[in-house]
Amino acid sequence: MEILKPEQLKEKFNDPWVAPYEKILTMVDGDKVEIVEYHPCISGSHWLLNQYRNNSELIDSAYRDGNKHVYSCHVGCAPLDLKASFNAAGIDEIVIDGDEVKVTHAGLAGAGVGAGMCRGMGEGVKYVELEEIGGGSKPGKATVVTPKLEKVVIGIDDTDTKEEGATWTMAHNVGMELKSEGFEYIDHIIVQLYPHNPHKTQNCVSIALTFAVESERKEELINRLVEILKRDSLSDKTAIAILEGLDIPEKLREYSIATKSGMMTVEKAEEVAEELNIPLIAVTGEQGKVGALAALGLYNDVEEAVKVYDKK
Image (cartoon, rainbow, N blue to C red; front, side):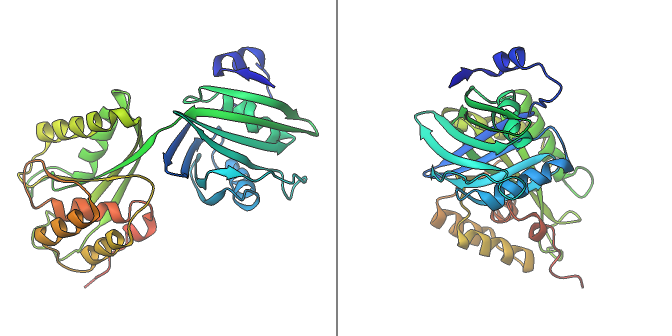
């Protein structure tokens, strides 16, 4: 076994048959692990996603968004029975070791090259334990080691007025500013709310921003986001809601569906948030708490999030 950092891999394997991944992030919540990978290809990466989802017992669910793969997994060991074309690649083992997450990938031929060689060159990787290089007709196997991160989802609503502004763009720009400060901004989800809400400015949506963050920087992330919103929000009703971890409580999802279907009060939002231990913060006002909390319940179901329930 050879232990190599990304820069060492790049120096050693400067070959036309190695395509480095862009980035790999790993978030942990108990024995659950979410892996986010940015593949060098876009739709071509769907072959790999299909192989991993079908062949890896440690993967509970997976999806692709462009060149981004998201694997919801659990800790354990489940060695692969590799077979060309049918069982060509997947995850053998997932271990949490202190502040590191160790994910062992295996694959045949090109999928074996991807196992450690391509992944190991990606941003976010600390080092790889390279067992077999792969390529040609050979198997490849490597353990990719990344820092243990946590997932923080922040719901945002009511940053605009009837005269100017747009919550979805302001929220994205907040995410980009935080990204420039070293935070991992993963996604931006628009959640359609009740279209007949008399408090709406126009389209009636709220936003969920997702981040992967070191445990010790979570408070800094939230404080900075609040500072930016106070600086830039055009509304006196702006609020946020904060969900940590990899699970969405069923009662939170139910609240989100109800907020898409009809009117919801600030008091009900506060009641649900308190029961689920979800912080609700009035940045410039209280009204935004309703939509901010609703954004959290559907951030991982984008098809449901965008549906308009009442088209009359």
